[in-house]
Image (cartoon, rainbow, N blue to C red):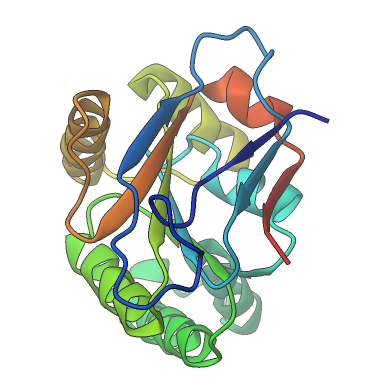
Length: 212
């Protein structure tokens, strides 16, 4: 199995205090499915999976993450099962978000490696994760799904759940900026590395894990 392993620190042991993480970008797009089958990160790191709504973030996380995963979609699904069918999601959306971030906080406090779903528009969440990574003396890693807006819209239709045109435009702007910055080596503040995936590269992956 081909594996992409992200470096822990530049030329020093993974747990060396005060060392700064390597800022690395790896582009696995346009490989026609010949990319690695596993992404392995140093133990204790935090991985955030970002991309457009419908790009396949939740599917990728559920299929490959072998450690604790925090996905806002899972929280929404649990609440929808408990709520009356006639009640619009918008009514209880704030409660879902509160529950999601409370679950994320508990996961971070555990000290475990965590894979986190990110919609791309919430920069404050990435800053929060970056602070937590620094507190642990570990690194924040970005896995970025780059798909066309048309592909993302198809994904929304397949799952039977879309977003408004206004919200989708916000997502497109935010994710396009993340991709553009990663392509030129600029990463979000506090982010040590980024991996760019297209649909074929994401489909090839069977594991997102952490070194023992």
